[in-house]
Amino acid sequence: MASNMDQGHKHEENEGGRSWVGIIVRFIVAAIVLMITAWLTPGFSQIGFGTALVAAVVIAALDWVVQKLFKIDVSPFGRGIVGFIISAVIIYLTQFLIPDISISIWGAIIASLIIGIIDAVLPTHVL
Image (cartoon, rainbow, N blue to C red; front, side, top):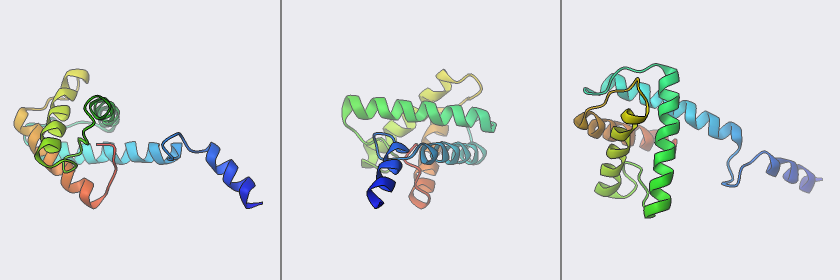
């Protein structure tokens, strides 16, 4: 009987072992973290929840591409200074893909630091 429950549970998970609900929650948390970061960071325009959610998806997609191409963990503290810088670059590049966001280079660096600190306390693994 337990094996039937396990098989049913496997259908709710994607290939990475995370449930779709878990992924959606992670993007929502990442969007909230981006909104907080925008509020705290000079050089980062204030954004609404919808824009932050789209930005979280774009940042996750860029993160995935960099990880697949260069085999580098680009979380702000994932690979020391390299991960921190690449994370800042990804945040900076996001403004060119989403029209409602404006981020200076210093804003992206500060945002990468803030996101890294928040991620250390509340891991989202989306940013």
